[in-house]
Length: 170
Image (cartoon, rainbow, N blue to C red; front, side, top):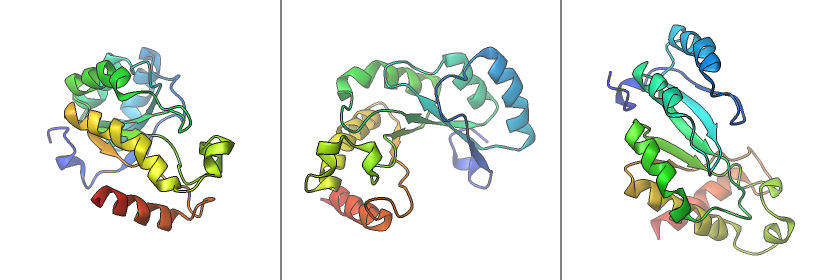
């Protein structure tokens, strides 16, 4: 298996801590053997949009044939311009990362500033924020993944997904 994900299809994956605070060498020494014992194929790790996850942490996962999926924690109300993300995305690609997720549960009112939620065309506004980041990731050889949706959510998840996919087709 090459760590690209192709050989990891039938392997289980996990979500790491729901924050970006557990990337020390001590954390790696504690969790990497556990992930290997569980035959993990992928691991979702949360990242700050302006600070990369340490290289040794990501390279250690990849060397163990565990593909990190970087979930970049950023607010829908104030997304970071794609140009500001370029150095971090370039580093991730250089270190062997393949997949990125931008944002979190865009179908929930808690993910948006109050004034933004009440406006029309929520999915279009989400795509206006997500697509530039996704295109920047693609330019760096990374695969952007749509963020998770809240089942049900304040905006029904299946309708949000369908409308998002229709918007991507356009």
